[in-house]
Structure formats: structure tokens, C-alpha cells
Amino acid sequence: HLGGRVSFTQLDAFTLGTGELEVALAPRLGPIEPSARVAIGYAWVGDANYGDYTKTTDIYGLSVSAGLGLDARLGQVVGIGVALDASLLNMSRSTDLTEAT
Image (tube, rainbow, N blue to C red; front, side, top):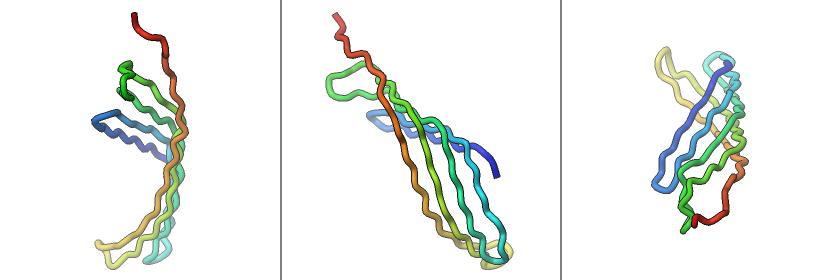
């Protein structure tokens, strides 16, 4: 399938968000269903405060994630599965280092 994936994490010190376009394959091979997915998109961090630096920091960049999984059908309704996912964020900071007067 082709779809989207969005995440938003609000922490005390900062907010992290991602938006990705995802491609996934999950062929049905009888009672065993392997799956694989890969996604690429945009990531950002906002409202960060690092020590005395009180200005909002804009950090943004590339988000890449991938995963492999295996599901086993135990009947018409019940199944069990396992998956392994990995994500990479490659981000850079855009700051104004001038002091307010």
C-alpha cells in the first residue's frame, strides 16, 4: 500500500513532529504474512529552550524509517506478530545568534 504516516510528540522541553510518505508490502502467504515498509519525509522540532537561549529554535530536516514484520494467523480472527522498526532523523538548526538589546 501507499500511504502517509504522521507523528507528533509534545515533551516539556520541545515538540517533535514528522510527516512521511510510506510504501508497504504485506503479501499473504497462507497462514504466514511477512511485511516490509519504508517511509521518507519531513521532521521538525519547535519551542526548544537550551539553557539561557530563550528564543524559539527551528530545527528541521529529513525523516527516514523502515521496518520488517512477520504475522502468523492462528484462526479466522486471531493472529500474532513481531516487527522491527528503525528511524533516522537528519536535522539542522536555523538560529539567530544576535542578542536582544
